[in-house]
Image 1 (cartoon, rainbow, N blue to C red):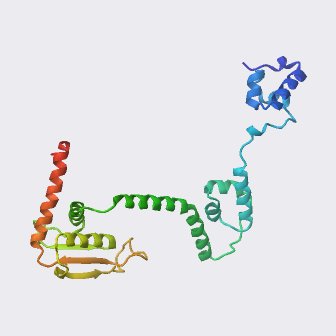
Image 2 (image 1 turned 180 degrees about the vertical axis):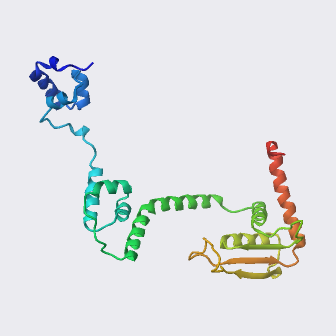
Image 3 (image 1 turned 45 degrees about the vertical axis):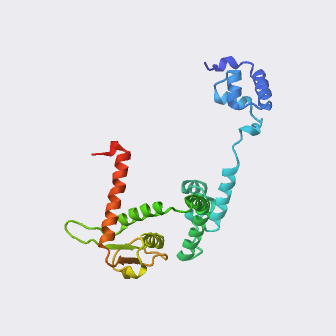
Length: 260
């Protein structure tokens, strides 16, 4: 229970005890608990003039960021630019510099975007390195593929991306269209494994992007879709379809719980 003011008659004695504890490195909470003084006003009076111990002071990292943010703001930087430069939240930037006058733009919108993109690139660089290292490690772990592994990979690849026969559109032909050079390379290696001679490849076309359509994968690395058709491929198509059904059946046998 907190003391009433009447119980603090010997204030100087309490102050002496509080100062002794303060100089011994006690925090205000520790002094409060030690002396059983739960009135904050009285507690602050007891230690008035005594600096807090170093361990109770908050780190200066935020203070340093705040000062840097204010410096950049006075130089005309926007909230987004400061956020990208310092790697802190926009709300923190707003809190730190909201009392400063709104700066006049000192660069063109294009220059602002360039600066913003450069800042974001710095922020994302560690993540990009981590992603690249993960991909490289996994790629190295794959090693060389056996013929069986390549065969199964090719069947799954074709069944995902190749032309398939439909009850309403009978077409037992082998046609593969894709924009990923890696997919094309794997497909060609798979055809080599199946002893499909390159002179059987027909209608190799490059389907370019129609600018009137809306697509999101038409960046600087997009080169269009390459289509490959195997001449006289009906028998090959049947083998592909059969192999795919075999893969599906093998999975079903391995996991009876998935059976319908």
